[in-house]
Amino acid sequence: MRAAGAVLWRPRADRGAAPQPAADAIEVALVHRPRYDDWSLPKGKLDPGELAQHAAVREVAEETGFRCALSRFLLRLGYTVPAGDGRAGKAVDYFAARAVGGSFAPNEEVDELRWVSASRAREMLSYPPDARVLDAFNRLPADVATVLLVRHAKAGSRSEWDGEDAMRPLSPAGMRQRAALHSLLPLFGPERVYSAPRVRCEQTVAPVADDLGIGIAAEPALSEESYRANPAAALDRLLRIAEGTGPAVVCSQGGVIPDLVARAAGLGGLHLGDVASKKGSVWALTFTRDREAVNGSGPGLHLATADYTADPLTGADEDSAD
Image (cartoon, rainbow, N blue to C red; front, side):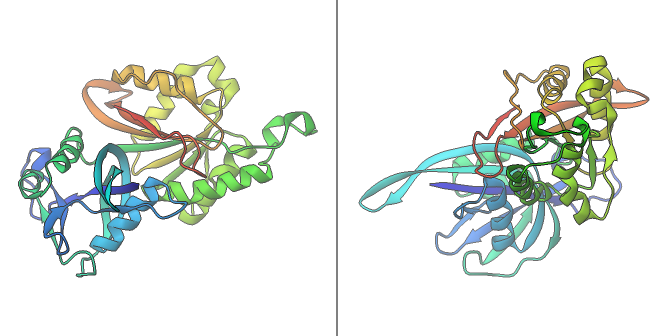
């Protein structure tokens, strides 16, 4: 049995201008379920065909009334639950999720919601394993920088294309992958869209840009030929994109993404092993500010977590490292 949930958070409305520890500057949502008389994090079962990310956002909305934007994967809790005459395994994937609007109203599953500090939440949670989810959430600042690094969806055969390779479009299979990406990427609340100068890359993320009513910014440094010539410039550009305002979607190619992610991970001391990059896949990259480092003229960033979804059509081969 698969389920998904989130640590739903928001800035504390009363924190004022005085500096506070990061853990005290935010509050998280706990829900009370009268059926079990417990306090827990919002979560629920995956519907058929759903990814864990879809289910987490849907369950947050259904149980709390709040819309949210995902950032990083936190962890998977595994345990058993009653099933028939015995017990069955259950796995729950948890994400960090920033509240972006909405309000609570009692519903069939939840009769009360409380916004509390992370330390108070830990005391209120009814089940000790849920504290591990909060610990994973508290390990990094809540307000991180998110880049969704996408490999373009499937394109037509190169041997059957008579024009310039840069103009080769998505195939029918690629269009299906694009539709799946269009349902996944907006869950992270992207505000900016970038692409290597390839028609297939631009087509892959065009629906997200259209939804936002913005153009796709061209990123020549993230094309395969530019990357081969100067990978350091591509890494610098990725970090500068991450430093921008709001989550970003970046579409590139198979000859770029594995080495680029590995280089970013190396700077942050993150050990990923082999970096996969299937067509239509997504790396959700979480960056935090490193006050000791310098990136250009501003504070540096380092890669803190990297979560991989190999196939948004099926949710296969999801993996993460931190």
